[in-house]
Length: 220
Image 1 (tube, rainbow, N blue to C red):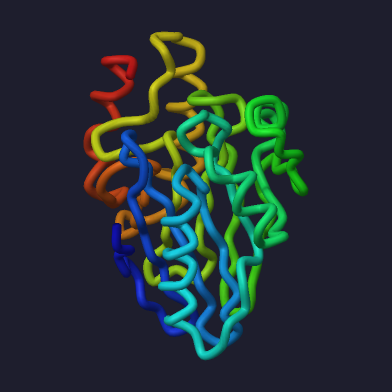
Image 2: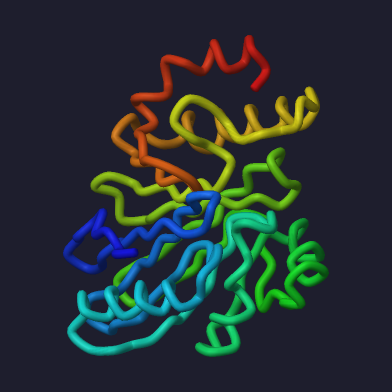
């Protein structure tokens, strides 16, 4: 399964690959100068993800290797290749603090860094900000690029085209997720911000913004 170059910016590239029966999106950000890489959601199929890393390495002036493995949340379909890639690369694994225990229990992976929101993850020429979006899971984290032009938002299963993530018909979980997505994404970033979700196609905040009242009304 080939990777797709979805962003080619002066300092870095973003490649996407879909894996597994769940059509999980895996994103790879590669710094052009150093070759350092950030992988978002080592969902499944470690062999395919190694091919993704190789594709990204071809975007850089030199090989820098995998520097970070970021995990948007601990659900099983987003973590199946995490242990394999971490062991092979030595890259630190990062996840939301309230999802870390599930990652350890299900995958045997002890996170090297736990996030609460507001932290920065950086490689040369690229910085990501962690944004907590509670509700789909307690520790779900989105990652936003700091360079703008426009902002890229890697939202895991917290925001998709057409709505927020699954909250299992729990009104409290929905209200929490809707509030976080509204305040921490829609109220903060412009309409041109590109949303790259954990499954399926990308969208923009501008495309989704008019539907926010409808989402709140329907409760999912």
